[in-house]
Image 1: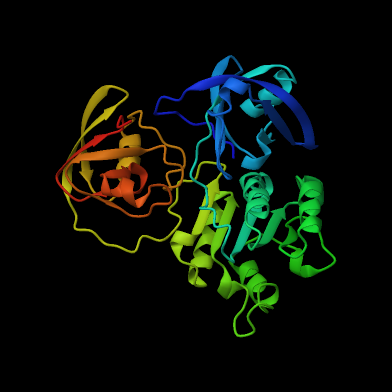
Image 2: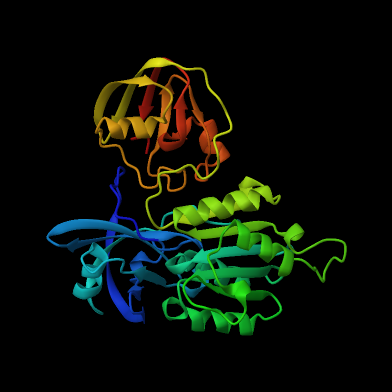
Length: 374
């Protein structure tokens, strides 16, 4: 995952040396970071998480997030990184930092995680596109290592075989755990011998996957493999996530079991908004952010709170605007709001009055928010 974002909350960084740097394809590379003994506890992590890296690019200080490909049991931090543009910040990271150099790295963050269930029989399906494989690779390595009864299916899309990252690692995992892991590669810009594997991972492709791959279940003759799916992991661009998440939901997977991670900004709702709200005009909003107090007036509640504050040029933190990243997390101190969708907050946090401003609609004439709740 790579996002150049404004960090609304204070983030602590530590200096870590680059222990290993490796080219993966013509526009992707990996970094392994050396963790000193006194920072081991700070850099323990869960599969699917990311770290933020602070570095200089084109004379400016940049903070980017990168997902880890390593699993917790490996006790190291490995990152998979894509250079989207030769003029971008990540290109500077690739050119200017070598083995032995130090980077400012945050503690691991992110909630693209799963509860481990080593004693259960589970079926987990992953969908990844391009560099979106990074957190799913972390998940799959970890699940294969810690959950001996879980079976996994990975559907991995790329433009071409030349751009497919971590092929050797994935194939070795499939060979080592052949009774529990199956991997299928799809190419959108390269013809394949079997037409089935040509094209993007979308709702139409999911229908084919369910009917032709996830159909017969050897463990239960009366149901299909898809019927047995416990969790779905999706990582890629926003449109892919939106399409596949909705298709999985329409095919019977509960939303709470569909987990996704973005590696670019995405401004649309993942799921359609199914509720209607009474129109409220002239909504007063007071909010605290980085120690400062702000006051403004929203014309009405037709748009979500974050989007309206951004339109008014307030420096509120955000990344995805889709309820996934948690950057706009805040606490409601006065008034009433409706949280439409939430992939980030726990039930306990919601009960404490926490919301995601990007997914919240005002339901009262006056609202007070606090972005400095930590």
